Length: 436
Ligand SMILES: [Zn+2]
Image (cartoon, rainbow, N blue to C red; front, side):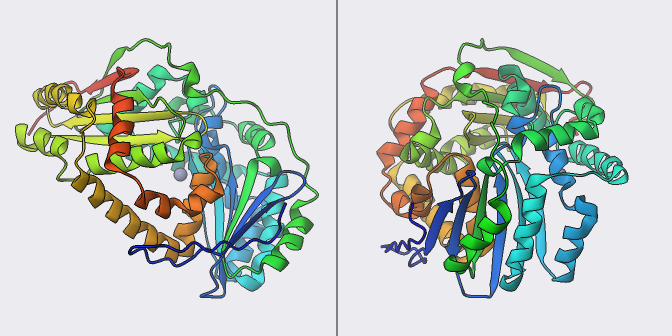
């Protein structure tokens, strides 16, 4: 293992980043550390990524990962929180399907204290009873605002639960309402015991990092933590045999009608970086306001229906979701009919034109150039991609690879997905809905 390695990537064309200066190493207990040196300001974005997230919620305990994240800064009697406030650090945490991340942006002279607290958080967990109760209320309110009044979210959630053992898929990050309500403090302890381990975590440090200093510092605080035997999770290889079911939900509070279709992606993104990028670019093109499929559905329904494409790939599953949203039952019926005709184009090798692909490549490269420039964006881009199973080398060369992607590769990735039938469909309807 090489401790110090500097990789310079010369970027052609118009990308703004000239090079990346990064290194990575692992401790004996499996903790992975990725450092990217960006010394423009004397600050460091320090983040710890746990490769678990909602996909690791236990059966009947959906939402537990997200709940634990909410409790994150209340631990250790609030000492970590107080310290961060004192030094004026920026901090936050988030949960996604495949990860829980805690981050702090701190002046570089405080890196050591942050490592000390982060190692304590990995090692143990404690709960303030009052905070546990108040956070439960906050989470239920979050669920109500983000999910329970949104027809698209509800129909997607219903479809996912139809195809996956819902908790092993964990696609419902926030959790089901009745399960959030019944979560106990012990459930959070159990989750922490199972998944918070050095061999299930990655430190991503971006900013004014001194490579020579960081390794002994990490070793000092994390080296003594023991690795754990991690449970093996199901993957979507298991869902292929499920039959397609159409389910109907009825709610009087949801403002609209929505249908969602789930397709299984016939390749694993983590093993096929180019195909993953090809499908990502293709979906970005299909989601453009001027994309033909979007325009056709909008104009046929006088803008009363719309379509969206979502690609989700991580270590547990590789699926795409198409959602249709309509103001009324008739609008949704019309959108569904049009979708059935238009999707035939996606089964051909000419779904998107060269111009459409080149336009999204330019968009993507420009947004990546901005990302590379910002320590927080760059760290999050690296963290999410690592959690999804991509290699550091691929992640750091993503812009170079995108420049070489062809129209044919993008269309081929789309065709591979849509030449099969959806594995699940769900349609959300609303009773007594006033269309005005
Ligand atoms: Zn939250």
